[in-house]
Length: 283
Image: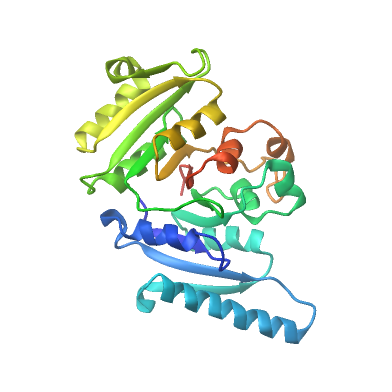
């Protein structure tokens, strides 16, 4: 499911560590890696030269830190606006996953601060793995998937099973938040298996012999999902996130959605673990 990974590397944060842990998974050992560093345009030629040299060092240092075989990795040093360049390169190489660092800014802050990760999340049609600067990244053993009937959530489920299939100690946590239930009311065990969409997900996990547990909890979706991820000490939280590009102005962020209530926006800001926002890419 993931054959090509694009790491948009700024030289800071924990995105490189995240990629290392992903590459430890048996299912991804043959994935093709592209490391991209974008050099913003500069006023003078001297400043531009300095930034190009600095960008080259960022890429070289990343390969060395991650102990990657240089012959197995593609590198790109591009000049331009980091926001649009990441989107362009992702489409150019037809990547299956974009990995980026994130400062975890809230929606309005991310607009005012010209956030690269928020822009890419808004405009790209591809799955993204966001790694906040202030979280702890670790080996992937426990993956939580927010389950519903959307094609993007189903993509996340299939991807989680793909990642965990050869990890004997791995665990897939299948969760739903039900606002109609009392806050903090919890269903588990046989009760969960009576819920059709969760029963289907559990059946998939059983067929692929992946360890699992199902949980349904009452409360507000965003805060409750983040709370469940923290309480269950998950290493990666996955949820479906529909293609958010506006239908009229494909080149501009959808400010109405940025400012409105979005589960994906809430989780990417408040989760205390890396977050994979899954999208079924129609090639």
